[in-house]
Length: 426
Picture 1 (spheres, helix red, strand yellow):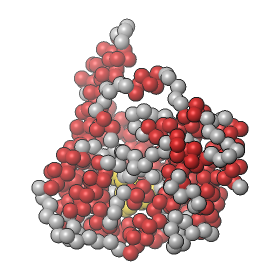
Picture 2 (cartoon, helix red, strand yellow):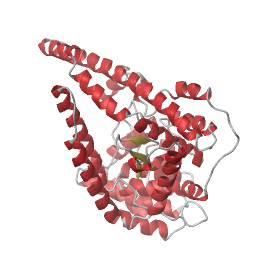
Picture 3 (tube, one colour):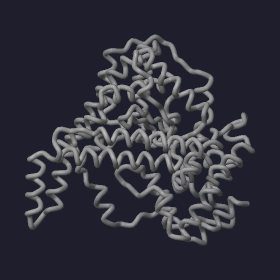
């Protein structure tokens, strides 16, 4: 909690990123909010688990395990203060949710919406009527209509019971005679067990990906029907999917030259070797194209989904933007940095801050957040806990820029890192 108050003080005592004063979201009531939220969902899950009823006992065990693990993860996110407690923005999102539900005569009591601090451009439905909007989504959406289509899409997942069906189908698949037979065959093999297991996993993943894509298309279709009832411009369903299709692509990068621009001065020079990666099995993994790249995307096959929706869309030329939405958009970049810092994602926070700082080296607010994150990274490297606060090297899902930055943090000498901390502290 202390981290949150430090950043709250910094960003309220300075003008950030623009001439107008930046007003961060309220975190003062966060403790009470998360305690109440935890109790609400703990009670809901206890009641739900008592009523689990499946026909086949062998599937029942698997389904129960999946639900319980998902519930544990969600409750852990609440304990870790991963949801934003600001009453104004939560009320605003609830109003948008209620708008869609009422226009479609859906019982609003079965639905609720939460705002996560997660910076990933995404939203989700966890299967019990709870829709989660990641704060990072505000970095992508350009108007309120796009946001409402996201909410309509997630209502579609709930309306069609996609989460429940997916869990039950996985249980059936896991207990099917075919999978059990193939698993037993692999166990009996003396050689190439890893290859056989990987091939089996690949087949399961492709089957699951096909089902997942089907569910996304279904949620798009019914979500568009829900969305149209609000009389908002359906054109923004297409513009939203276009943005999601590119959401796995990084908008900006941090080159070695950028790092030199941010850190170097007359008394300090960066060493190029800090940015170099080790040749290892990781490099080999990077060249393994066992899986379809689109199947790894957060938002699969948007191109097909866009073409299907276009057939049912007639634009009305209008765009809805409330003053509240515009206020969120104006503040979303600095607020995202606060969210990253308060969630102890220091590596990502530093990376995103440096991408902004290279364009505005006179920005004192960025200098402060860079100092805070560098200091946290220095201390975590000192006590060997750095992996908790840095993203992992990943040549499949990370950009080259992000991996280069991770190498830099991993390789830089402590003495040089201390120089950088003091440089921004001063």
